Image 1 (cartoon, protein in one colour):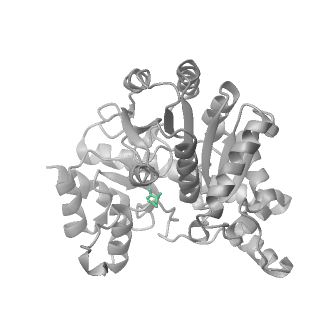
Image 2 (cartoon, rainbow, N blue to C red):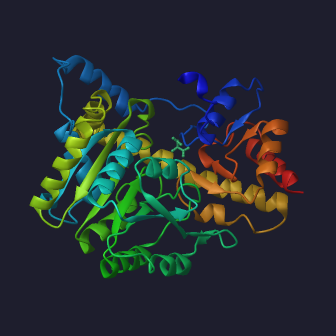
Length: 397
Ligand code: LMR
């Protein structure tokens, strides 16, 4: 039966990552996949993670199964990191998952099982993998407008107007912070308005929180999700340690279920567990064991917070630097929005053809829609950022 198959198209972001690895040019620039890079273009293991990993290695006495819900202390620490004291934790149940994507998958399957006729509203644009992930889980997807490219900001009126047409029980996928791919986030007042809209129309938020700590800070980046949790009876959250702990390949994430009552949360989580058991059965342990130690050990926690903050502030600085270089090279202020946006990504107003030309001719890799990873700019190369800016402006001619 396999002979009947034609090759499946590669995922655009992952294909870009592999093409970059194979590119032999010394001056190539990786602004593609969402992986943090330091000034030397490396993605090192964080110091706190390395220390935790050594302790896990020394202290671990068994490799026996954990359980479908994973490491309980890890889950509780993630819950505290996201929800703080915003709501009683009796309303929450959390499940360790294989990465943030695993959390998205578990929650997509769960929501489909509970509410098969719901429509899931997804921002336009969004992380490209949201769409196949939701459709594979059987969701009916609609898009809500999100981004005003001319202003480089959220088109909140259009977003609200579209979501007002959703029906009771529909699901709204929201990026908790550092919107991927635009870098344009809701402010606290807008989160409050989204919460009111969801309450009024009985919509259920599905929050993807993959970049907590990369925007305004670990606590600040949870403001939106905490508003939703305070105001609404139900929501789900997919959290990831890939970026803020740089645990990418360890596949460490968490799915949070917030119910109106403890019973509702417990019963909903039990359905998720049943579905997990018949899927991958249990999550891998290693990344969560590290994450638990990083969050719960006072010394490691302090080291990690400092490392995370230096990554965050470096990206904020790069935004300023890149916006300045583009202002100089274009002799205009049209790229100033880059300095205002948050997280790893922003979008440049490039056509797919211009993006391809930049990759082929200049070795500058970015996603086809003009999304670039700010952390990939060649900061340690003499005039590196200015040269990237110059090539981008030239490509627009
Ligand atoms: C990205 O958006 O580049 C990252 O989230 C990596 C991925 O899996 O796509």
